[in-house]
Amino acid sequence: MDPAHLSNLNSKIMEKERLEFTINRLDHYYDSVNNKTAVYIALNTFITGGAITFMTQIQELMAKEPWLVVNLVVIITCGVISLVLLAMASMPYLSPSPIIGSLYYFGSIGQKQPEEYFEQSKKQGAKGDKRDLRNQVHILSQGLNAKFKKLKWACQLLLAQFALLAPLTFLLIKTTLTS
Image (cartoon, rainbow, N blue to C red; front, side):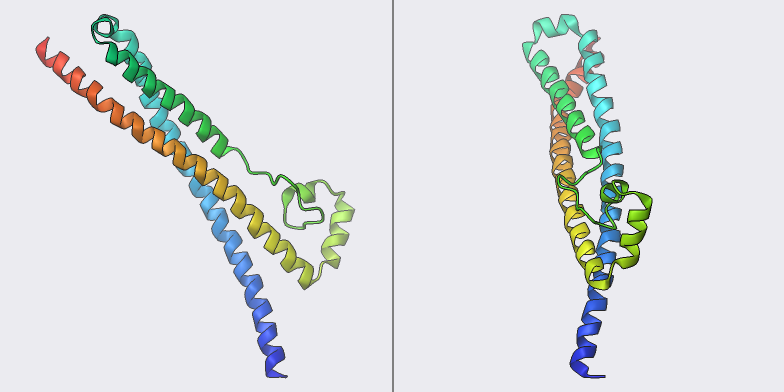
């Protein structure tokens, strides 16, 4: 066999393996997004719920200390915005333009009749398969990028909540010790 032909063949095989490996990695990252989202939702719910409860317990103190109201409102607002972002990050990513004819994308497969899918699957050659894999890697990457951006914003809002809790914690300790 001609060395140039053999090299080209190896390159094609390597690309398909790389694309499949990349899809598996992206799948792992999607799992990571879901796990992080669950943790952030739990923390956020605890902090936001605590702030709301705290607000109902310190009515007299809030009348004397107006900054408390502002602080608690900001904590609650950050919490609500963060929860919305987390809900958006946890939603499944659906490609804005489904790849017509894809044998990998569930949206495209689900639109086909079973026999149509079976026939296309039988006829799909290595070239079409690679093109389909490339599209999948690209679309999965777009979805993951969008999810991580939302997670980043939610995390920053969560950190802001923690920072705003510091003066409240100090006040709570001070009030408890002086009572």
